Amino acid sequence: HRVGTHGNTAFALVGVLDYARVVGDADLEREAAAAARRLYADDTAAVVGAEPVGWDFVSPALTEADLMRRVLDPDPFASWLDDYLPDLAAPPHDALCSPVDVEPDEGDGAAIHLIGLNVSRAWCLAGLADALDGRDGPAADRLREPLDAAARRHAEAGAADVLTDDYAGSHWLSSFALYLLTRNEGGVAPGAA
Image (cartoon, rainbow, N blue to C red; front, side, top):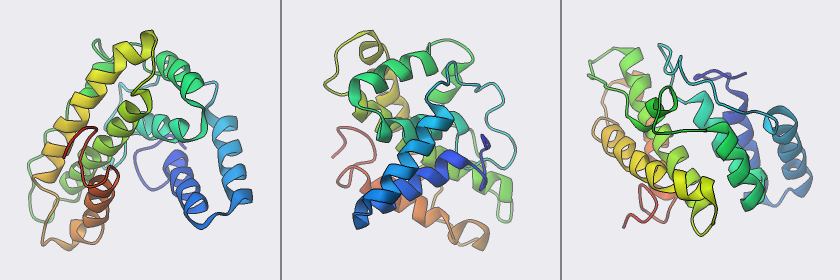
């Protein structure tokens, strides 16, 4: 499913793939990667005009791209990403580069989800920029800097509100913050210290 909530298939496959790699389960890794390719390898021109929808805490488009960077070799991934995010400087894809405006309000579950969305977008954008680092070609040249800059903006926006005493967010936002902070040896985006 291409949704921004719990039912997002790409988000689930990222978790399965990461788990399989950490514990060394080659069969599970192979199956998760095959499922990702079967479901998403032919996708082009990500549909982003509806993002975010109400309670989203992941970006369907960016989560899919984050999954595909994990299963495709670098050059095929750069080509896939070039077709999938054709122009980050123009609507509607430019919307992925700007954090969602959130005004946290105790007990407002939708606002708390949008804080999580900014954090999850940050790690996806940073991972995509990392995947293009050192690559040559039009996709890498065109996408690397906007992805890196967008990752930083999302990390800053999400980190500002990620710690909350409200149970609606505290029971899961901390895991998103930890995932972001540990994804790059303590940095919140590519090249961050």
